Image (cartoon, rainbow, N blue to C red; front, top):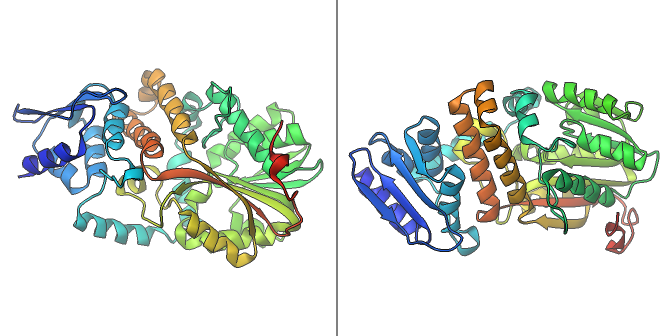
Length: 408
C-alpha cells in the first residue's frame, strides 16, 4: 500500500530530471525525464518501512531514513536529491512536495504551538542545542575571516564566501548610518564578526549579547585578536535582561537571531528594542522570512536543528513592530543570496567530511548535510527568503533618499 502511494507521489512530483528508486524487495522504478539543469539521482531503500515513513511526512520521514542509513543515495548526493524534488515543485508555482499528511500536520501544529513559549530558560536551552555543539564544526564550515553563520551578500564581482560575508557586513553597516563614537547593540552577536567589523571600520562601541556560551568565549578571543577589545564587549545575556537594565543605544543590529525568538515573543522582542533604541536611533533586523503568510516550523527542523524557532512572515514581523512605533524605513528582500551561501557551507562540509565524522559520527554528518541541502533548496525553490528591515523611531533619523546606501 505504502509503496503504491509513494509511486504515485513521485510520479506526480518528479517530471524533469530523473529519480531512480530501488525498493527493499529489489523492484525498481524511474521517475521523470532527463532535462538540462535538473539532477539525476538513484536512491535505495533498505527496508519496506521507508515508503510509509515518507508518505506520512515527506521531509521528516525521508530525513530520518537517510540519517539512519535506511535510505541510501547511490548516484548523486543528498543535495542533488532535495534539489531535484524542490525544483520540480517550486513555491512560485504553487508546489510543495514536503507537505505531510493531514494527521501529521495536526500533530505538528500542536507540537509547534507548545514549543513557542520560548521563555528565558527555554531560549538558552534551544540556543545551546544548535550553537554549543562545538566551535570546531563551524570553523570547518563557515568563512575563516568573519565567522558568519547567516546569509551573505553576493554583490556584483563577489566570488568567494569570505568576500560575500564581508559584503554583508558592509551592506548592513551602511543601513545603520553610523557615526564614530556611537553605542551599538548587537543582539545575537554570534562569534563577534559584526561587532569586530563595526568597531574596526566605523569607530563605534559595540555591546554584543548571545545566549551561547561557546560563541561568547570564542567571540571574546576574536575581539582581542582583532585589537578592538577597548571597543567591543561580549555578554552572555538575554535581550530581555539587557532592556530591563535600562541601557540606551544609538544603533541596534540583529542578524540571524529573530528566527529563534519564537512567534509568541515577537512583541516582547520589539518592545525591548524600542525601549533600548535612542529617539534618533536606527535598527537593522536581518532575518530569514517567508514569502507568503504565517506558517509553522516543520517537524525535522524543530526536532533536529532549531527547537523553539520559527521563520516569520513579513506581515507578522511588521505587525509586531508597528505596535511600538517603530517605523519600517526600508525593507529589502534577499531572494537567492542565502541559497548561494548555504551551498558554500555544504561544499565546505563535504570537503571536511572525514573531520566532521571524527568529531561526531556518520549519523550526525548525514543529519547535518540533509539540513543544509534542505535549507539551500528552500531558498532556491521553496517559500523562504531573507528580509533586512531598517527601523527608525524618528522619521528624520536617516536621509530621505536611499543614496546613502550606495558606496563603500
